[in-house]
Amino acid sequence: MPAISATAPGKIILFGEHAVVYQQPAIAVPVMQVRAKAIATAAIGQASSTVQVIAPDIQINSMLKSLPIDHAISKAIDLTLKELAIEKYPPFSLRLSSTIPLAAGLGSGAAVSVAIIRAVTAFLGKTIPDDIVSQIAFEVEKIHHGTPSGIDNTVVTFAQPVYFIKDQLIETFKVAQAFTILIGDTGVKSSTAVTVGDVREAWQTEPEKYEKYFDACGQIAQQARDLIEQGNNDAIGPLMDENHQWLQKMGVSSPELDRLVKAALDAGALGAKLSGGGRGGNMIALVTPEKEAVVTEALNNAEAINTIKTIVGGKGGE
Ligand code: PMV
Image (cartoon, rainbow, N blue to C red):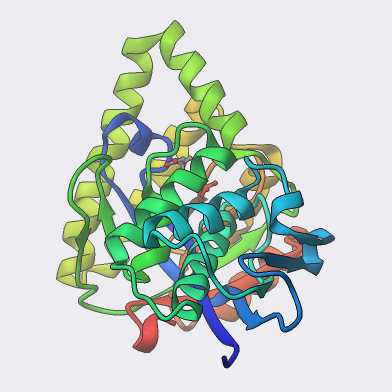
């Protein structure tokens, strides 16, 4: 049996993080420059129906049955086998790697799950439709996030720009005119489960105030979708700034994120905001091709530990 490999991209949230947990629309796009990869290979000489999991990045080299049952990797494999209704299978090893930074708002957990689901399925000679792949990844996301909205698993599975409303049918949409986003990493690891939990607590304490914030972010996401579909890209920038201000009010920005956002704007970005759970991880900036180099330099000078350029709506989703 040949080795089977599957990959899944990272993602950024352009608009609407946190508010999306409260049924507001949000926009997310894949980031093809970073990927998670899973390679399934027949393990000759091993006992039937066993899986060896090799994930050097996170120091795992272990049989599946020795991993905790609620570990994200075992959950992704177990749910896939359950979906395929397979109990007996040839032994195989699953080697996992990823260039997506962990706990940084770039969808690393969802991408690893999707790569696992696809590699295991293909290795066993089966197929699973994308909506089921996304559903399985969503179940695994619950381990990482507690109460995820489902946006990460959706955008990572479909690898297309999505306009996402929790518990509604997935909407992909067209990007009329490609635009460039720079992603700046603060280097600060931050748990999405914690920020989502804190926002929930704050909302429970001051529901009216927080619902106003969520509504405002939802309206921004709607307007942004219209602008993106019209190709009115310059007008997207101010909406990013506005969205960042609402996220600051929600308490999910941080000095490091604010520093990178300011550096990008001062250097001529059309707009900038945090992306994902916040309090660390990555921020994003919209730039024209002329400003790309100078904004990248400004982000580096402001101590971004890494920058990634991604073109939304570019060929192959680059
Ligand atoms: O995985 P992250 O850090 O990109 O966060 C996902 C976005 C949130 O809206 C904060 C949470 C969610 O489940 O939608």
